[in-house]
Length: 136
Image 1 (cartoon, rainbow, N blue to C red):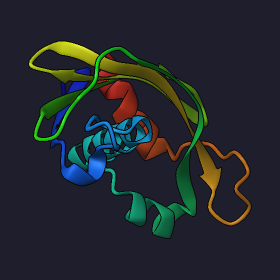
Image 2: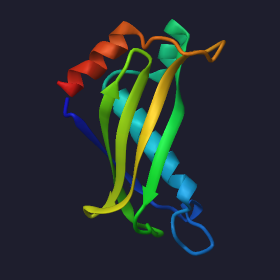
Image 3: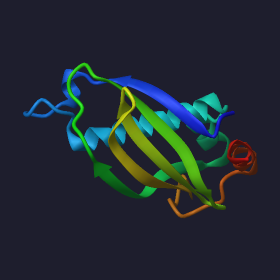
């Protein structure tokens, strides 16, 4: 698997604000979808992970920078890569681009937690192995 995943998304009317540009919080939804679809491509289905291991992933921290606006009907490509992999956390660098032009970028820290207690928990070994394989 490539070390960077690409995910295309179209901007719909519901994604825009009164000024006709993508509302800033919607970029977080785009990034979430890209991470989720990347995991699916790797064979990690979050609903199955929860059922089998009682583990879920939650966003723990993020830092975003908005460079240029996206507008209705734009086709964006979300670039995602893992920058750090811990026992219970995954750090991602993600960027939204339109025709190669950087629109927004961020770093997102996702933690693995126990589904019942929401306390940090180790990433299941089979998932950790898959994620390590794309970093190499």
